[in-house]
Image 1 (cartoon, rainbow, N blue to C red):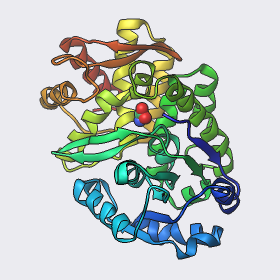
Image 2 (cartoon, rainbow, N blue to C red; image 1 turned 180 degrees about the vertical axis):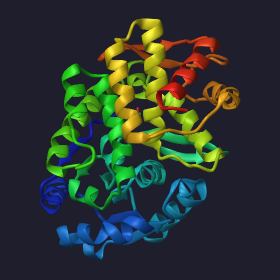
Image 3 (cartoon, rainbow, N blue to C red; image 1 turned 120 degrees about the horizontal axis):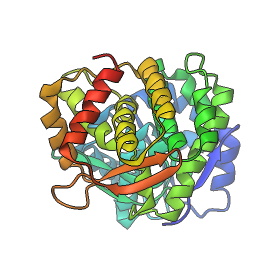
Amino acid sequence: MSKQEIVLSDNLGDDLSRLLANRSLDDIFILCDEKTYSLCLPYLLDSYDRLRSCPVCVIGAGDAHKHVDTLSDVWMFLSEKGATRKSLLLNLGGGMVTDLGGFAASTFKRGMSYINIPTTLLGAVDAAIGGKNGVNFNGLKNEIGVINSSDAVIIDTRFFSTLDYSNRVSGFAEMLKHGLISSYDEWNKLVSFDRERFDLMELKGLIGRSIAVKERIVEKDPYEKNIRKALNFGHTFGHAFETVSHEKKTPALHGYAVAWGIISELYISHVLLGFPKPVLRQAVSIIRETYGSLNISCDDYDRIHGLMLHDKKNDEKGEINFTLLSDIGQIQINQHVNANLINESLDFYRDSVGL
Ligand code: GLY
């Protein structure tokens, strides 16, 4: 997989112009959803005049639209507007737009170039980076897709000023994960960030560092054969919590579910691998304060276990594949955990968040 250029932009127009200069592109197409069409596209077009005449494809917003029917609409748009293998797709949006747009571009005429311009913090620090893209299928998240990286990712933190508190802290959860899988230095910087004030200038520095953590890992193992599994920390429980939250009709944003998943997975890390208790306590207190809780009871344990057993990250049938930590930055992939400890970690989660 070719390396993607990641630009932490101070001037979106200049950066686009530099990235597109000297490339033999025939046409540029823009993909956005209904929200980014009204909130973000005007700023993008104002930043770079060349984009004003580009065809724009607008899809529905939200995970329900991350569907093969929407994908087919995007392929149809590209086909009817005459896109070729020398065209470029600009994906302007959160993870749903960059994942779906990345897959559309990767498969249209067997692959055209694309650039991601994430408009959410979650997209900037995770979804838009590393080439994972795809759509949901048969009730399963990201079931169909490929790993194929964009030519570039351009991050302009001005887009994040329109995000509400929950979407900001949802993205911040992936940054906390990057802190835990990298170093005390990263973790301590994140812990001292004021999540209420959410200063975008200060955040920009942290975003750059957080992306560097992911980049280093993806570069070593783009196809997730080994160390890229570190990025799944918090996500084994996290994905199950996310699904359960939808089933209970109290849908949680992805980052919230990951944050709750981090509590359970740090607990297991502590019991099995001696992850330090003071850091476990510190993480629990930050997560409780910032993310509240998903209301689960013992009656939900079997469902959560069942969902984790069907996670596509598992390598062997009947075994849940966990990434755990023996300390901050000390990653242990391919860990198996017995059912009693899984239940105990759910008890710990419930105690921690006051259920
Ligand atoms: N979101 C995890 C990864 O890109 O591997």
